[in-house]
View 1 (cartoon, one colour):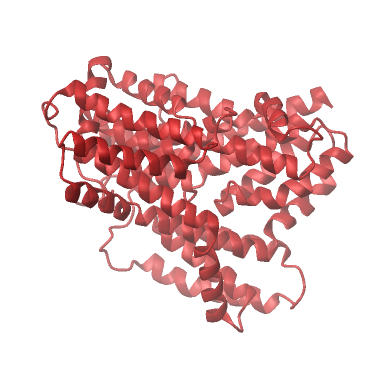
View 2 (tube, rainbow, N blue to C red):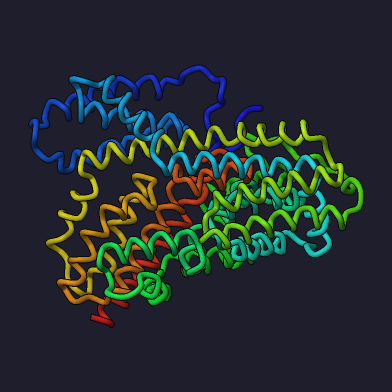
Length: 493
């Protein structure tokens, strides 16, 4: 099928275009020139921004996410180690794959893919879709229900991104909602919602990080709770997605083109990694039992994750075992077929996992180049008590967007930002709110962040298709949040 809108990616099997062929030697010459300019042992300064800038450039030119990340990472690595390029590439790749976070991510995302695969194999997602059709009678209602369900699944953004998209896309397809808009709504109720609820993986992680770095003399979770009213990007993104779902904010930018295509009868974009879902007239077997078989595993997943101290890996293992036993007892499928669906679920997650792993490689390279320190050092002379929250939000939002690491960046930045805020006697909840807002924006807006990649995967579109249609809304939310941080900064100073 030929591309029917200007934001469709290059065809997967298409041979190289002139732009890509021209870009490759141009990047090689540019990176070689930067490497020649840099004096050994000196700080990289503004050059540290180049790998991330190349990622954005290549992604916009080729509309390919994984390839853009690889180009940026290879370019940054050449700047670091031109004499031992292959050896350093092997070392950093091995270190990333041995990273505990990556191992956790592979297990969680893979098992989540298998878990959802079992639900689809047994017809449970179809039962849930037919149940929702009893409640949803219009296009607007389908978008609003997707938003509401996204807000209710607040334990973890991964769970939100995969569970809501897979369970609602059949319904939104019925009302000719583009998969890009589904991905936007799912992504907007993932990280932005998770930071606003103190019972989430985000809250547990950042509360511990704040307490470890001396942001408070008391409990880190209490400071986190105090900061929730000031996590302005989360509140703005949540309000914006509801306005978009109700139609009060019209479609604009690339989203408008995607919605026009969907209204014409093609909700799935060209070259997306998904096929039109079968329009079955009714679920197999008892529809109410099918609904129970969908809701019970979801409840076990959420409950087990909460029981094991908000650990999604533990929750996913328990839910997978529970679902396997439940379906075998009811003879909904054979053991072999269910295991095949788990393996198929793992396979469908290979691309998003590869993208996230490549993002981790880029993050490590940016750390060695000193990108975060350069951003903070550059902006420190302009700091004042009133401007601190807005500057922290904008600078950290840029860093997280460029690296795709909504958690890793703050291991570096919090030990720097918190002492500055304490020295200036700034409002700590406001500064922490700015930091968490920046983390949420980066996870939401970056087209290769784990949350965005999983939202696009679950919704059935490519990361760049999701990223291009979502970025205008994310930027609009960031502009509003920056203005509010400026107002609060001058008000509370």
